[in-house]
Length: 139
Image (cartoon, rainbow, N blue to C red; front, side, top):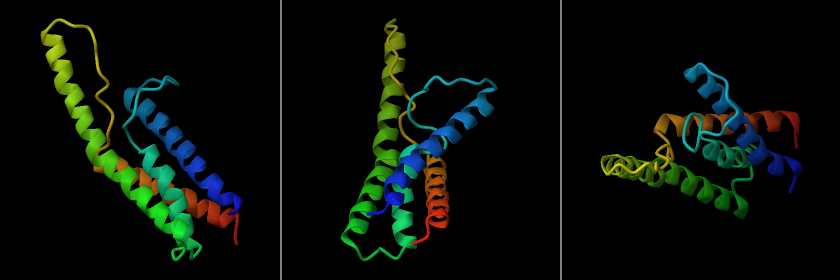
């Protein structure tokens, strides 16, 4: 295994996280380093799993067993972000409404999953990170 396969997921995560922080600062009009929960644009999860998968594709390693594992992991993470985690967020919103009606101060985090555009942005970040790593570390 070469170094770029260790760097790809880390670089995807950091790049998407930095872009997410900048996007939120631009949208809110204020700069904050405080974490604001999961969800948002771009999906760091999608970027993290897409970067090594794309790197394997571009290096012609699609016939290796590790590619199958990377593909399965990417599929699971993206499906989870689009469906399961989004539904958990919807349930949290409904529970928060019930808690407010009952006069309870507890608040559940509602921003957990992703909209399709957020996942696509994460995939795009992962592809860009993989392209940059491929360019910087030719085989």
